[in-house]
Image 1: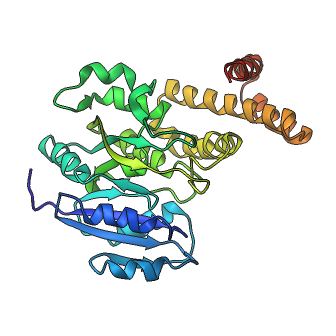
Image 2: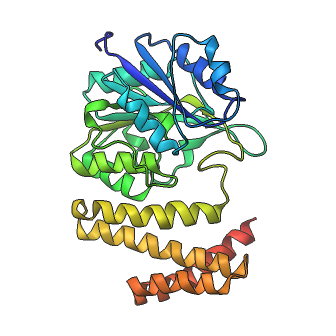
Length: 317
């Protein structure tokens, strides 16, 4: 590994005065020394700017509020490193996060790597997040020297079905980024970034089950702080529709079919939620109509499946 390789750490933040210092401290105290630390304040109205004065070694930029993707892109424009890592301002890296990830990235000339983490639970202790991930489990047997390398077909299939690597878990090569974070995406701007990279070239990717960082949870998290109905509405309906339109020319017919069926199933599930939980009959019918307009047979098949799944989950609880 070339120890002179500069890593730019981008920390987007918005009204996170209570947590931002922990994130910055974890970036400053990384065992990997060659870093450029950029904090992008996305229009905070709290005392974030004042607090960060105790870290004069960081670069601080203030911009009007535009969302986490626009903040990350602002950081990318000001980056000097050939390697990029984006740390959410409510998360914390353990000291060897960068050294471990950069060594793997550089030694095997990979496009990006990601690491497992300790996830806060809303109640109780933290837990090993990726251990029971159904999309990653098939690859655990490939582990060697603490890392699991994915074949390109595996990477492509994985990221079409799920995003096992939130922003704070990833270290990536700047030259592999195609167009940055999509500022029109509500929640999964990181997922969209990885998917664009993967669909545009044969990306080389690896991950480790070693827990190298800590995800903290509260009601302000872009993903974890939302209700399931909001995740459906924004991530699996609105965002997925944008991704299908944007990447249609890069997808095979089968891959597009997979995304379309997920989109329709999400419309049906959101329709069920609006009907049963919110009593919004017209909204429910409109969502169902959107699914029927795309594929009538599949929608008819999805309706009972969604209700059965909901009943099974209720019984489990």
